[in-house]
Image (cartoon, rainbow, N blue to C red; front, top):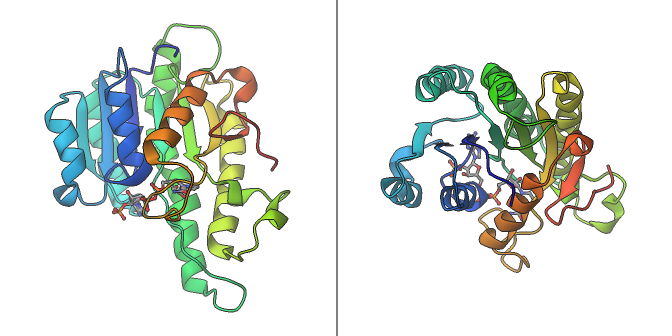
Length: 252
Ligand code: NDP
């Protein structure tokens, strides 16, 4: 694997894929010197705190990604932790996956899902942009890469409009919000290319987490290992794409 980024921030890192991202990033050879692991309720994040006690590079910050004031506070805290260093990798992982078919979907569930899965990743990225741009400017190396500066939005294969017929469930809030998140990734990739910041949507596959189905083929450690491998190989051509955990392109 190419050398990993020096500084990383992960949202929703108390359980599921977010927790596994922190665990694996912290145990990479030449692991990041700073992993900012954010979650809504650090007091309850037992597994995360256990990893952090063995790893001084992990800083746990309280963050509800849908709370604007909280995002502003985290921006200040991140600045204090980084002390002039940039943020190389932002993993917008936090998400919700409610049901909601044509006959029972409600306005509330649509709005709440969009707030968490679309608006929050965009506004968290907006808040942390100065740090991402600093990282792009100050990290050696030519071209876009995860070790320089990258925004990774964790999307879902269910967001693919082109292959939607393969999935029978309605899942209106989830599918439409992740499809919109994909547009956020694409827009970011265009807006930030000149600044040296890469942006992608990445699908973790079907994974056995609280959100995933119990019969899902992948365990969190398998999905995250493959996603990190994909991230390590990203370059200029990959920015603005929608990738599977295997590294294959997913049709929009
Ligand atoms: P989990 O349900 O296990 O974890 C979801 C995480 O998101 C939790 O840490 C949760 O925190 C956090 N979260 C939700 N809302 C907020 C919020 N407002 N602020 C901060 N954190 C929040 O799911 P996964 O680990 O499986 O999901 C991670 C990502 O992967 C999601 O974006 C999901 O859509 C995506 N994904 C997962 C798939 C799967 O099969 N598992 C398939 C495709 C995509 P809390 O504990 O506080 O609720």
